[in-house]
Image (cartoon, rainbow, N blue to C red; front, side, top):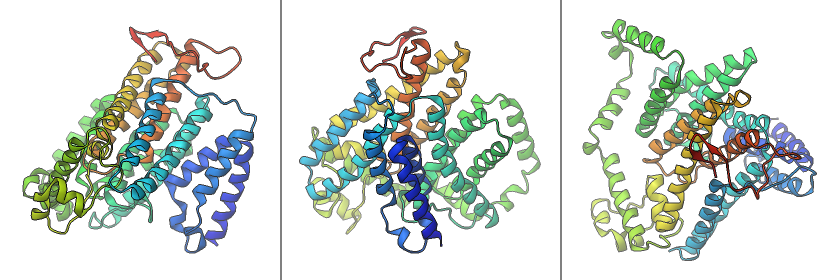
Length: 445
């Protein structure tokens, strides 16, 4: 019954996407982050439901009457250049067939990201896109938080089966990045019932992340918590209540928490004694050596093998015999697989997004018609920070959510510029208007 229902829903939305491609975009994003296939038991688990939706959306993009215009901004240009570098590094990859498969997979993500940029033309659509991501992941935050509390923190929290989010490290990353997005939705939402749902998702995400027992996710959660607290209008009340709680529970809290939590914390503090942490350092050295040995192209996607380990880091095989691991770091994954060109473009894309968010945040404070922009910019910025922190310890260079955040930055910038420099016949700024106005001494481009 679940399979039939899901197939019927996908079929319906795929038809709608032919005439309203933005609906197809939102539904595609929901399929990717919610992964409803993991709740089916039969044919729906193997059907390419996301592919069907994507094809319908692409067809709808070309045949629908919606306005279409490429947003020629620095972030979109950098993203296109990065995509091109992915293709070039695949041509010279150690294993071209494996690299080609990975390139096709990532190209599908980037294609839908660019369609998202082209079709998200106003705030209501931007909010719809953000809700599709935040509420989908918020569901797993709520589910994982309830599970963590019900089991007393003794069991690990995992994500939906047969997806990137299944592993505890991956769902920890996603939930840490998602908490700021839920914070934004909470600030703009006016419906009482949905506000309560968002609150439940946001607060439950904290024990859910803790019980992934992912040390990288813990660091990300700590950074997110501090940054959100600094942005909160009630920061002093929260700090005071937390202090009172810790004082009252000082003697009983250690007995209430699971032993597993203290063991994992000890491994985080004394990382030099932990084999898992040590292996990451060796993996980082391996990927660094590949990137330095092939500085212009890197090793290409999926260059990890006994052969490449023996060639570039033979000491690794002496310390970790018969082991083939990946980089375990988004930063070094990009450097090892695509060399300096890919690494510089990837870093530049991230830095430009953070600068743009800072600029539009300052601008939003001066114009009441976009008073939501500062909250939006804060949320996306904190989510990027969580990605950078957790991604340092996880192969997350191609995580969909990162690239959708980039899309949101581009669209948010365009909305801000449209208020400053309204287009007479379109909700979008013309692509030819590359020169941007000065906002408080900083220039948006």
